[in-house]
Amino acid sequence: MLGTTAKQPAADEPMEDAEEEEATADLAAFQREYEDDHSWEALQEDEFGRLRPLDQKEEQRAKRRRLLSAAASARIRRGMIRYLQVVVDLSQAAAIADMRPSRLAVIGGVLQGFIREFFDQNPLSHLGLVVLRNGVAEKLTDLSGSPEAHIAKLRAALDCGGDASLMNALETATDALKSIPPYGHREVLIAFAALSTCDPGNVLDAVKAAKQHRVRVSVVGIAAEVHICRVLTQDTGGTYGVALNEKHLEELVNEHAPPPPARAADAAASLVRMGFPQRNAEGFAGAAFVGADCKLGDGGYTCPRCRARVVELPSSCHVCGLTLVSSPHLARSYHHLFPVPAFAEVSADELARLQGCRRTPKAKPQLWPEVPWRAHCYGLDPQ
Ligand SMILES: [Zn+2]
Image 1 (cartoon, rainbow, N blue to C red):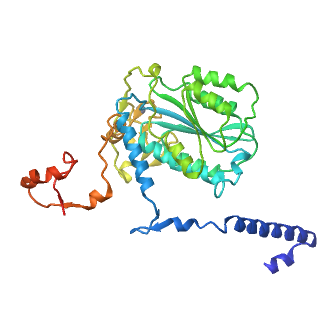
Image 2 (image 1 turned 45 degrees about the vertical axis):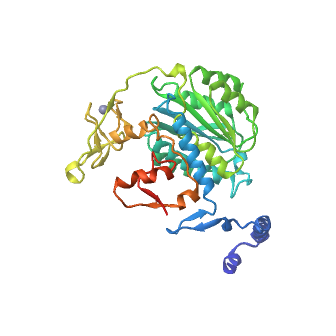
Image 3 (image 1 turned 90 degrees about the horizontal axis):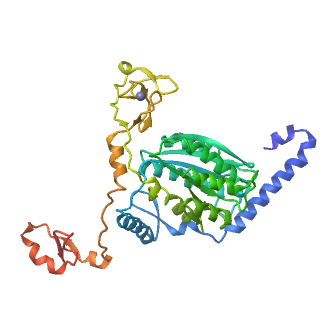
């Protein structure tokens, strides 16, 4: 370190000293702020070496709430094939450090998790990314069904500055969504960190255009409630929530992973043509030019209509536009139509009194009076 400094011209030395002092002051301020914060004390290690919160009840309650709400809404019609534009606010407001380590890092992490969850729950859907930075809305990825491609692009673009413009965001998202087929459900999810919007025109015109094109806009606020976001979500039928902390932000964003209820206007039944391609042989025997980029590779899938090779499923054929899926993708989407039924909850004390009887079903009649949820609980015996 000393050697390097000695080689620098003399004029740079005061500047380097100032930078070093600033870095030391920053570190001292950081340590002062978090010296009483022992966040590791709220964690414990489980049998697999993973860190878990001490109180797992809250986690279990949240899981149960999700299951119950899915069971309660089993009869609601939902849009299975979704086209979602995710808009990320990367203006100056995203650099504020009121979330740890910064809003930018938290938003990045939450959205990466959300993209995986979204494709896990909606394998037939498409997602695109738009970022708001320096007053403009920049399209990061086109609507497509490949989670890893979106995540890689998002990771590379996590840099913030300038103002956020809701109008530009809405126009860019609506432009991308207005040409999708009528059976697709058009949605926009905005992660909004700023407290104002800096627009080139009237933002209400963009709201009207979104409504006209049947785009459902939802907003997750990171700072505080903003009136225009409330108006925007109410007009287009979306939801609006403001995050209280990092955990709440994750919950609010992940609420958008299951498909929302379909509006009556969008609920007309329509037939969608789909192809179920076979996987090709791998190795030299299967060598072919694969995908829209025509890269030489092996394996891939052959479109049953035009015999073009595509790289992955689910996707659209780059030649004839046919939607290509596999049967597990359809089965996973049906999960939202036929959710797991609600189950009866038992207290931990009651559970502790029970053990498996390991006997043949002959013992059932004696057990039944003592087991209140007997309809679901076979072969349990009080100690
Ligand atoms: Zn094709």
